[in-house]
Length: 640
Image 1 (cartoon, helix red, strand yellow):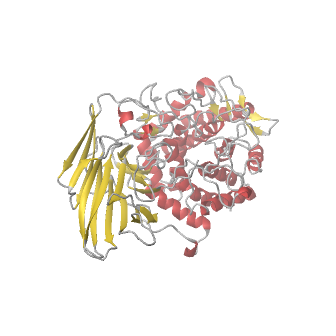
Image 2 (cartoon, rainbow, N blue to C red):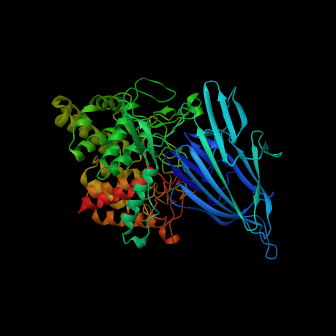
Image 3 (cartoon, rainbow, N blue to C red):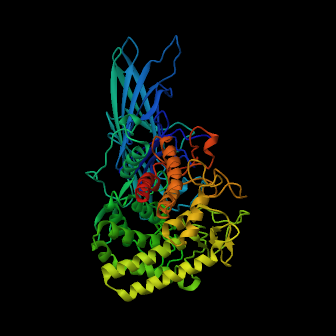
């Protein structure tokens, strides 16, 4: 396994991934490259040659900010026969568009004509086709068309009512367009220029690739953009936590995408992360907004309105939709459109609905403005109804989920297969009641009771919710606590057995308040013991257990956002020393990543390496990781 050396540029819900030479090779799996917009790859090949030679990086592609990169290339040469040309390449991305400026400089003393070739292709691959499992999907009737235009190329893709396109516009126009040489895809085309150069002269090529996704008209303007300068450095004079907060806010600006609110209003909300999750995610957006609430309360209002707009209205087994349920994720790609994957609007999350209620109350509590809680009152009541009915509180006594073989096996934040396991590594079978979701439900019921009293003026409803919350807390104390371990179970399986792996989910119970104070403090201290705390962060699973693996997605890695929730819980329980120790580790990890916390870290101990070991498939930037430093700052201020 090798580290991904590709660079990534992002702006306005669009990103491009390139090699260090500025090329796109059509890579798949965990490190895909290409131009991506609206859940599809709109450019899958972009390879330059000069006089038939592949130029190598004299200066590898280096980001200049987040949306632009530059590199210096040269064809082959030796000490006695140095390269004939130098190529200065500058590339950038904005909404649906990738642009490139090539400056070709001759190093020869005489006038020459250089041949520049650019091989271009697009596979219009849905993101789900490019995932690491390399799954293949049938696309009956799909047709591609490639047409040369006066100034470049136009690629079209049609399948039934689905139509997408990619345009390549060149200035100056190419001298020739031909099918790429044998061994390439039939759709690949090579654009060629014969470029006259004076002695030691230079010439410029300007190239633009414009994605035309299905159902999205060409835009003549750009959405409001967030801009920032270079990454913060110690020279700025700020402490590491401040620098991590600044970087996090800038990354959240980069991840901002347009969505529609409950009343049809245009909104901007944080997407979950790049490369796989540049879209609205219920759980991710809710926790991100909660972390941001003291600093950007408008984000929470936008996220709540967007999620109310997609709240479940009917029962649909394929997508997991149920009345009142808050969506897990939304997708805009071809496979979702044709229901080949359930993620167009997928509701397979047990925790997004209570977190919606938690955030709604927290927004009112923070801002003192009741208007949003009034506007979304019906949606809040429907969310409570879902928790009581389809969510399982009335029937099972807990929020539960049944593994979805066509979607997510696990439907809490640890949603990978095998994540909810016993100490022997066996995956629990459903209906599964995960511990942290019960805490969220308890908190949601109490907070919604507060809204019923203070905003909706419905005392009877408030009393009913408080009684339900009290019963849940009492049951939880009996059913989930493992006396021998002095620790709560990760979950209860469908037979009511305690899923006994020692997991970080217990830290969320400190935040929600479902544990009594004595047990909460005991759990908080336990999470900072060496088997849990790596020195950088708290691991998802304590080391020493059979299923532990430091490079497992949810069985031994360490997630910044998970630690952020725990940090807020430590502050709530008054565990000052533990909070400071955890914060120091996370801030040091951020500094080791140029102040950008990735989605997930490997679980190796801090003593093993000079810096944090990256998890090989981590999203970066990623929204709730970007918001984690803000949550740490809030926690530190609370404990003061």
